[in-house]
Length: 216
Picture 1: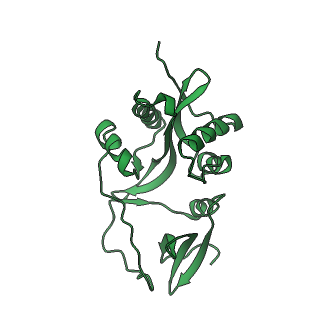
Picture 2 (picture 1 turned 120 degrees about the vertical axis):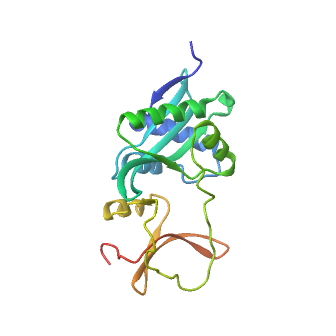
Picture 3 (picture 1 turned 90 degrees about the vertical axis):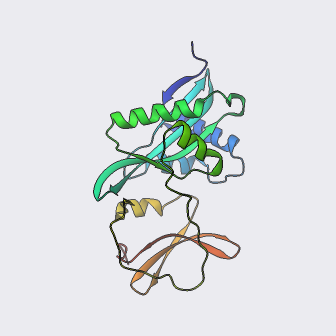
């Protein structure tokens, strides 16, 4: 009999609370792992409920892996897919391959539900696991830039291979984060969505568009 039992996500209040306890224990400095934020991520997304699995050792939540739905244009065709979001393993249950088992169970469930792809932004510690154990393609490191002055809005030069679809319903949900606050600012014919968070005096830029936003 396997030491750990894998079960699909339990998204009732008790299930959310268990996941929150694990995430806060594993990442004590991450102040955004409140039950309210988890509920917002896993249940309120207009693209659908979270897809994922938990690993249980008796009554102890030993591991957690979750993805959330999104839509994107892939080679010009709209597809439903998933964004790899949160993963955590209890300190007493590491080194047992739970991450790989949980992720594979999630992807199998996702395929059976008609999702066409999974994307993710992994940190340096997780990239190897995604590429070597789960078969992810490494597109490249996430580009971070710092700048001063206006942001240029250029016309599209070519059709991107992968482009998330950010419609008004998605954007309204994204900006309703229970902890982080955002503000919209106009720049010429474009719109910037800025986070209240900053680093070394620079505010984070979440989103830019030259197409306008509802309510502007």
